[in-house]
Image 1 (cartoon, helix red, strand yellow):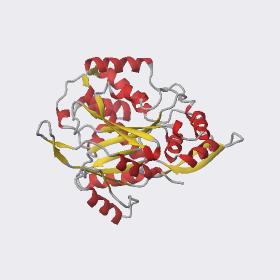
Image 2: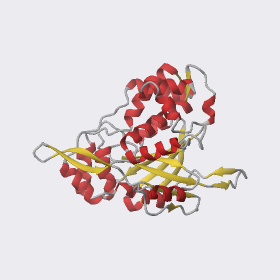
Image 3: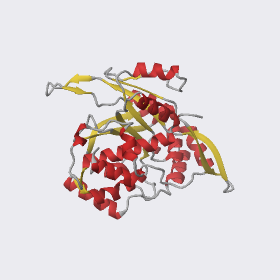
Image 4: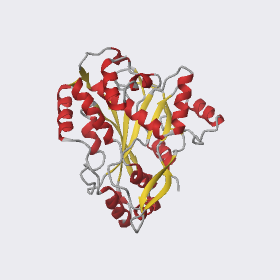
Length: 339
């Protein structure tokens, strides 16, 4: 076990967390070598991914049941990517608008833009970020931005009402650590252990309890923005990279789990995706009189992806297709589109 990973995950998730997670997830081969006390950007990125994956399993019982089943068969999940939703809007409280709230974290961790995907049907833009040091082994981030200006003035006002109260979880000390990480591609272990819990908190809801009236206004035009109103910037889904997504879908269907009816296939034919329906959660809203109202809404979900290889035209190398597809993404996003 990589001692740096163990220490960081213990600081963020509790003692023994790392050992439990490595029974569920593949760890990049490069993590077998480490320098005690000095954390590389790749190690910190991997620790963040593992902690966020564990957090999603806590919120998604269907994903937990699947992952536990893989572990019982002595298998491990290959964490392919995590997805989160943002709002590109000038009225986001103390948070930078849209994906800027996360690129300031991802870039110091060693991530770079890998693709841009217009999601015009749902009035969003998706961007994928791959890790420079181990792009095929460290999970990517798929960050989407919703564009309120493409909706009605009523929705725009509701967006302002909801996200205008957002706080920024990044402390000045954390910003300084990220600057050091971007400069040196490494941090002292003590600083990395202090930074990781702060980074984890960034992947949560940063705004106050939404008003039910605002939520219903959002829901009438955008299921995606309604989801952001209750879940914020939490992982919308986490994805297991499997060798045959069709076989996995059939097996999960036979177990009676709520998996998508059809597999989404990219235009290239090399990227195939499906997912469970989002697990429902109960969230609190404020009624018109200020009283608390509880309502069941879609939470996060668990996805599966198969990536085929291709021959790179420039290098002649066989490479794994790490791209995404706008059509696939739009179809997968529907997993949270509940009335």
